[in-house]
Image (cartoon, rainbow, N blue to C red):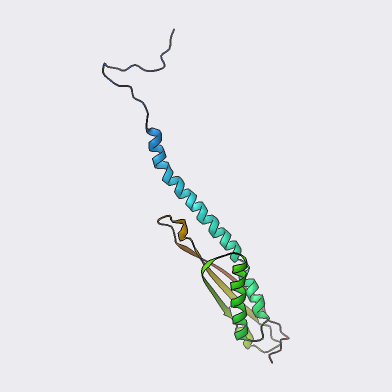
Length: 154
């Protein structure tokens, strides 16, 4: 007994049906989806890496600001420290914002006080170039450092 591997046409003149070209159609449908998934992975990795690099920058700036003698010096020191820390970590921010709460400097020596620094870094994502995805992401870090209660204000 012989088994047929192909089915014979039902009527004379009917062609064999095959699936030639279906692989091309599947590839044409799935390729854009694959590219979009890859772009999302790249964006997620870049945001996670930038977030890891931003964490701790405000702590460095707050610690340096707490060693300053005046509120104005603390503002300048915190801004310089945050900018330098971001540059040392190879994080290229499109916009860096450093806000320093120096109200603790108004308290009398011997009274517990602190300085708070908030750092915001806007990371540019537009070079990935996928339509519909955000062009940038702002990452934030905040830290508080105590002022020396025995500080000399002179």
